[in-house]
Amino acid sequence: MRCCVATADATTAQTRTPVAASSGVYELEDIIGLLNAVQVRATYGAMAELVGGIPRGIGDRLTRLYSRSPEASWVVNAETGMPTGYEAHERHPALLSNPDIISSGAELERRLAQWKSNR
Image (cartoon, rainbow, N blue to C red; front, side, top):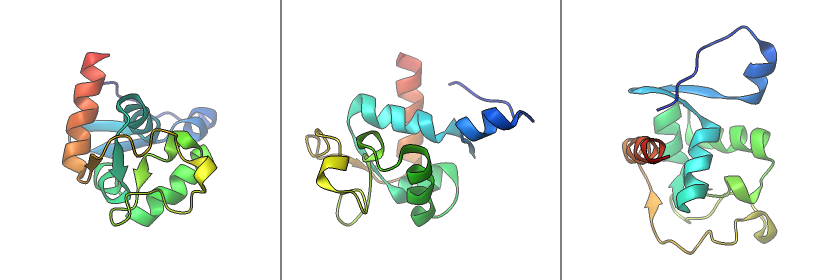
């Protein structure tokens, strides 16, 4: 699992978003990488459990990083299974190809660790 070290370099802080969890440090970019690589959705709540914060805040952070791109559309509302506020052209074309949706931070963390160890 790749970890990051806090640094005073402002440019690094703006380009990467480190987040702490029970077993290490994660970056939103790593989680989005996992979801795209394995083409599985995860709920805003699962993301919030893993990285901290509230589910609604995850959407705001992703919008700042990805501007509602297909890459970030794998993070979805638990009730609808769809990314909140995304138009059809902003969603990944394979978004609905896999019925699985990761709904807990623990499951997301497990899959992220497994994915990173296989890379």
